[in-house]
Image 1 (cartoon, rainbow, N blue to C red):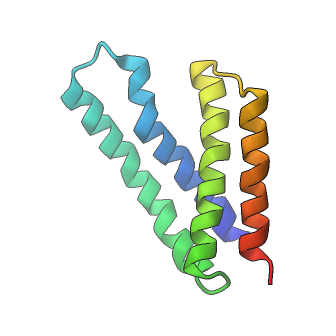
Image 2 (cartoon, helix red, strand yellow):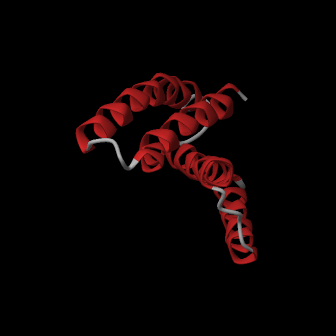
Amino acid sequence: MKTVLLLILSNIFMTLAWYLHLKFKNKPLPSAIMMSWGLAFFEYIFQVPANRIGSSSFSVTQLKVLQECITLAVFTLLAWIIFKESPSWNLLIAYLFIIGAVFFAFKG
């Protein structure tokens, strides 16, 4: 459970680092880059321990599949909150397939 919580926190910072600057397009590009790097620092504070802790229970491939699923969930939520982008029906179906991928990655 620690791994999942740390990955969620990591992905919140990652998503903010990658996309939050789009809300401030009037700021100079170097400022956007510095803001993104600052946020990415916190991503790594959570990502590295998540992978270290998780590697005792999961394979590297399982960690990656889990991380990607969390990334999409966090991205969708933040895109909805920050950019007012509602998930469409076809995106929700795509997510069901991703959840299926996670299931098969962790199955026996």
